[in-house]
Image (cartoon, rainbow, N blue to C red):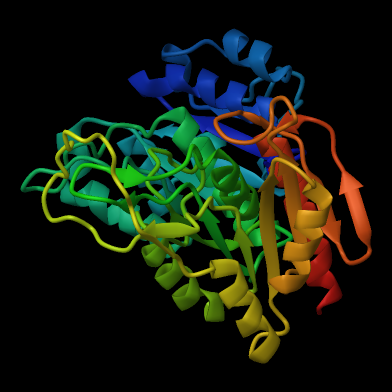
Length: 409
């Protein structure tokens, strides 16, 4: 997954909340992703967590006071505000939120906030009643009107719609919102819409049985996250798998059968700049689906009549020929023999820009694995890749997608 936080300079403001200890997890997460973190803490914040702990994590002195020594040396809140790529205040108490909303610059954190030119993210942390108070809500609305990003837990509701609110969002979700912001602003695929199909399809025989395959959807979900991490709007059409993406999808459509996937993919294709067809779609489906469970016959033999499903790749390839020549179409080929021949044939027949080939004969590739070994084939030749994690493979595939999209500009 593209690391959009690498090299980013983050000012982390910490205030006097019992949730201050969670700032350690935020710091660790940001630094792990390559960010540089400078902590600014309020005097009240130091009552909950020591600057020594924070300094050890960031490898930087913690800033709290305007003057670091009594010899006139001082910290420039203006320079700090200009240094940052983003300012994150987590936890943010009701008191600090009120000061930010009304320009009460009585500590280093608020003066830095008032000087910041970078985007500001605020993660409230307080008692539910304090959060629900009209004055707090008014202050939060003021911060939103100023363009600040308020990070709050999204789950949990009562009649008041405030259950879960007030509690500081979890560190990993706070970091994710920063990633989403930078991906949407700076990613290579900003302004692009990418359709991705993933997972298996289930073709019903009766209410309890189906014809399916072993696809886990891991490769497609890795591709969805990779595209989203580069700023794309991702339309994810997923077969029946229990998986979630790291990034929120522009649109997600969960389907079960090949017919449903065909309908969803063909409907979405016109609005997309590219489609990556990584789903393992059934080639055949039962001609008849029994209304009741099929009973085992005493004779033991059973004949099941099958009919072909719609070929999604071929259909989109034909649409590309007739109406959408500027779109990029990427296919997958999972083969067991004569791999390159089959992949090249599919590339031509289905009018793909390139195809991703992998073989079940390669250990660690194919279904149910966290790794994959692929070859990318286009009309100019082939590029072989070693065994990698599926996240790393997704990076290679999307790198090629970006290159093809750039050529079509």
